[in-house]
Length: 61
Image (cartoon, rainbow, N blue to C red; front, side):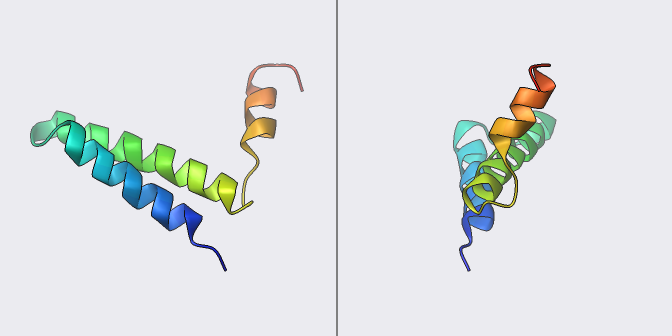
C-alpha cells in the first residue's frame, strides 16, 4: 500500500519549517502546509478526489 498521504504531510511540515521557524506563526504555517500536503497525498493514494471536491465547492457540480 502506498504511503503518499503520510509522505505528503511530512513534506508539507518540512516546507513549513523551512519557510518560517518559531512562534505562533510558525505553528500556523506548519498546520497549513501539513494539511495541504496531507490532502495532496490522500489524492495521490486515491482516498479522496480533489477534482470532485473543488468542482462541488465551485458550484459547478
